[in-house]
Image (cartoon, rainbow, N blue to C red; front, side, top):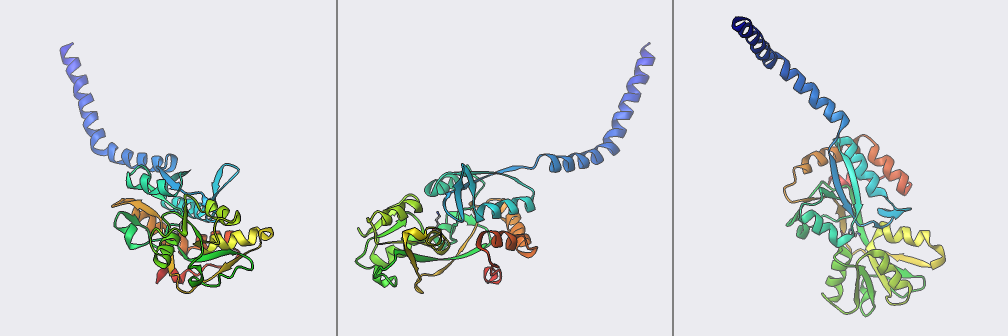
Length: 271
Ligand code: LYS
C-alpha cells in the first residue's frame, strides 16, 4: 500500500515538474494574448465638454473632434476609455491628483503647465480670436483696451488678456466655462469674448441670428493642443506612438474632415 502510494506521488511529482518546465510558458503566452483581446485596460479621460466643436455634450453624450481623436488614439494603443465631463479647473485637479489617466480638452501646451503635468506631442494648432457683435468698433486686440472682455478662467485667452490689460484688471470677466463667457457678451455684460479660433468661428457660423463677427489679431500666438497626463505618466510614450500612427495612416485626417470639412495641416504639427 505504502509502496503504491509513493509510486503515485512520484508520478504526480514528475508530471508537475514536466508541466512546469514545458507547459507553463506557452500557457502564459496564450493567456496574455487572450486577455489583451478580451479585456483591454480602461483609461479614465476627463474633459470640459463646453467647447464645441472640440468637446461638448449632445443628448447627454460627450462628443466632438477631441473625443473622436482620443477614441482613435485609444483604439490604436489598445485601450478602452471612460470619458467624463468634469469641467475645466477640475481637469487639472483630477490629473494632478492622479485620479484620471489623461485629459483631452483643447489644452494648449505651454511651459507653465509643463512644470506640473506631462503632455503628448502636439495634435492640433490653434490661436486665440476675438468674438464681437457685428458692427463693433473692436477691430484688433489693441481695441480691447477700455472694453469689457469675457474669457474662460485659467485659459490662454485669459493669459492673453492679462498681458494686454493687466492681471486682475476689472475689465477682464472670468467664467468657469466658455459658454458662460459668450452668454455674458450676449446679455450685454461684455463687449467681446477671447477664446480659441475653432470655437468662436463655429459659434458665429452656427448662430447667424445672433449677428456675431470674429476678429483676428496677429499678436495672438500660435498654440498647440496636447493630451495632458499626470507628471511622469507611463502612458506618454504609448500615446505619442498612437498619435503619430493615426497622423500617418489617415485616421486623423478622416476625423478632421468629419468635423471641419477640410484637410488638416499635419506638417505644422511636426515643426
Ligand atoms: N486652449 C486654451 C487653453 O488651453 C483654451 C482651452 C479651454 C478649454 N475649455 O487654455
